[in-house]
Each structure stands twice: as C-alpha cells, then as structure tokens.
Image (tube, rainbow, N blue to C red; front, top):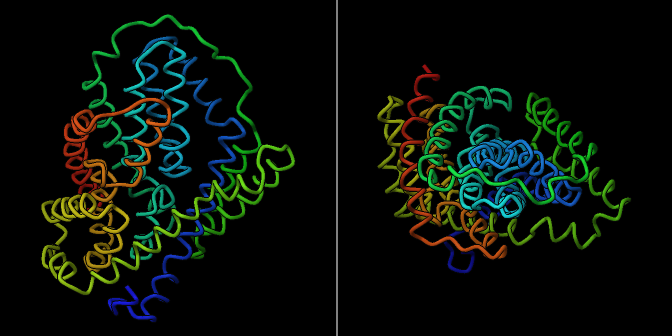
Length: 374
C-alpha cells in the first residue's frame, strides 16, 4: 500500500495508532484464554456440563450452548472456537454421542453471542469509539437483543439436529477430574469488573486484559504450566499483524470506489427498515471482506446516524458473519480446529446450518434492537 501510494505515511501512523489498543487487547486476551485452558478451566467446565447432561444429548447441547455463549462473552470468540471446541468434541466422544450439535453450538455462539460485551469481539472494540456508550451501557443495550438471538439460535440447532438429539446415550467415560481452578476464574472475574470500572474514565480494555494476562502468566509459570515460548505462541503475533494489515488495506480502499459505493448504500434514517438495511449491508460486506475489514470500512460511515445504527451494523458484523466461511476468521479457525481433531465439516453441512439460522436470528435481533432503542 505504501509502495503504490494508496496509503501515505501519515495514514499509516494514524491507522496503527487507532488499532494499537485493539491489537494489545487481542494479544493479551488470547494469553488469558490459553492460560485458563492449560489450567483446566475449560475441561472442568465441560465435565460439569457432561455430568449435568446425564447422558442425554439434548441436555448436553443446552449445556454446551450456554457454556459457549459464556466463554465468547467473557474471553472472546477465538477462545470458543480454538480452545473450547476440541474439548466439546472430546466430551461428546466420551459420552458416546454425536459431536456435531455441540461443535455447531460453539461455532454459532462464537459469532452470535459476541454481541453482549465490547470485549467479546474485535468488531465491538473497533466500533466502541463511535458509540455514545460505556462498557455497562453497551451491555445493557445489547442484553435483550442477545437474549432473543440466543432463543432463535438454540431453537434452530434443536430443529436441525433433532435426529441426533433424541436417543438416550448410556453415560460412560471419565467425567471425574480436578475441580475448576480458582485463581484463573477469580482473575477473569476481576478483569471483567475492571473493564466496567475503567470504561467510566475511557480507559481502554487493553489495560485490564494486560494486567490479567500478566498475573496469570506469573501464576502459571510458578506452577510450570507455561513457558515463555508458550506465552509467545498463545499471543498469536501473526494474527495481530493481520488485524493491522487489514486496517491498512481498508484505509486504502475506503477513499476509492468501494468506499463511495458503500457510502451510497448507507440509509439516512434509523427506522426499522433502515436498521435492517444497515445490518444486511454489514452482513454482505462481512461475507466479502471478513467482518474485521467490514467494520473498519462501514462503521465510520454509519456513525453519523447515531448509536443505534452502529449497533445495527454490529448485528450484521457479528451474527451475519456466520453466514459464510469467510464472514469471520472464527469460522475458518473453527474448521481448522475440527480438522486437527479428526473431524471435517462439508460446505453443504456448514451452509445448511448458517442459511437456516442466520437470517431469522438477524431479523429478530434487529427488531429487538429497534424496540429497545425507542
């Protein structure tokens, strides 16, 4: 971009400065999630879910669904697809039931459950400066929307996988194990409190996630759960570089043909149909560019319409990103995670679920947002 003159040096500096807090948060929250996984938090939670299911696939799906929603909201969607999904697949195998309902619950929640908190998805963090909301205000506005979306998503999964959820399975396998480790849970809980408190003073969430990551790395290092190279690998520096590169690429095209086209498609009101149009536009852009690129491109154009319009865009960027493989990097990470676990999902199977659930979830989500914003 620099070599061709599409982005000058000043634009480069401005883009990096804007994305730096987001990238720091991404790196540190991935470290927090990795330490939690190494300490056994996810495995212990999965055992509790499996034990509560009592060998019934429908109960197991409900438990996994709620657990995936919680992990996504607190530790971001990447933790759900990379760390929780293989544990869920293993738990299903241990209980002698199909892995598909639980695996797809992780995928759907990785995108749709990331509506609740600003820290649940990088799209939310990128949009936060354009919102007249702090951490608590964001959660309060999105909570009723998420509740409706969760109902739609769960009902959709129950219907689509009803053939795999009807047979009582004999409970077997090892469901015992160490309890949920206390220190990581407490640190994560304090991190969430810090997010809410520090947002009152416009302090970036990266400060709280950095503090939590530091405490957990020291704690885990003292117990020989992690080594320095494990921390470096967990931080995924290549992913951080990708976010910055996407920002620069979008900065180049935003002032050209694509930016002009998108600007013409943005409505000029916040009626229900206008909000739905914003959400659909965000969904299309996410499918074409990935949701991170679409956020950088679309949100500044929608921001003049106000907070409700930006939240509508986030519905498309989060829920709508589950429509295609390329809508969200989480979708591709989920597919790779399953492949490493010896499971492969076909294009037909993925789109059977995404096309059946995403439109209904997006429509009712926008309708709920329109009602609560009046």
